[in-house]
Image (tube, rainbow, N blue to C red; front, side, top):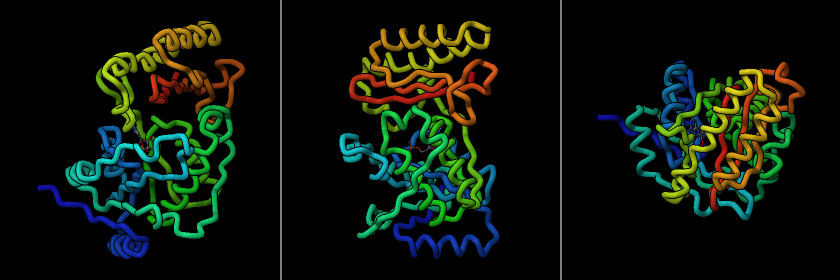
Length: 283
Ligand code: AMP
């Protein structure tokens, strides 16, 4: 029988629990999530277990990374199923604060990331997003004081922003990226995939298929612009409204002048009906 993880809901309770873990010389890994856990999240937990003796998973739907028009209110919340999944993975602790515990009355500080946070990808379409992410991740790191933190490559720009922030602010946390887990047909797992209608779900793997084909053509030496323009056309023709479909330098996320400016990453964001999907792959 899996043991239920300890659940902390307030900062003092979290601190007490972490102090007791620390006394036993644990190395602590943190896996930040917004809940509605799927196998992608579970893969991060397993990566954390391989690298640390104790694993904390945070479940917090962070209001400051949602614009007023976005889905904060309707974001899927599946607390009981999440706890069962984390218990089955033998997670040590769940950090599940209320919004007021993270942003108490009078809260007035914000981390404003630059560098990979201002390269004209997600930031162009969700200008509020990385400020919200950096602020909450900064808080999660200082609350949990982990040795390492695992983030998914699924949110590739976010991974780069968090790595940069941890380095720039000397947060003392090693940020590690973990590969994207996909459905059998290639669709990247996401808590938001439940928003897709049956018809949209059939179309959704087009993103991954098209990125793979473009990566193949670029590796084969074909003209990058032509390959990407062809890919964008396929994605639009499948019924998506495209926000961006770009090849960037995988480290800086800056634009490239030629394929010699690698390592390269293809990144995409597109809406299918009301659902916005993002994905990326290495070239
Ligand atoms: P979220 O709960 O969607 O905010 O994601 C929490 C963490 O899980 C982030 O580091 C994501 O990048 C990661 N993640 C989400 N989907 C996947 C996936 N399909 N494969 C691997 N990691 C993922």
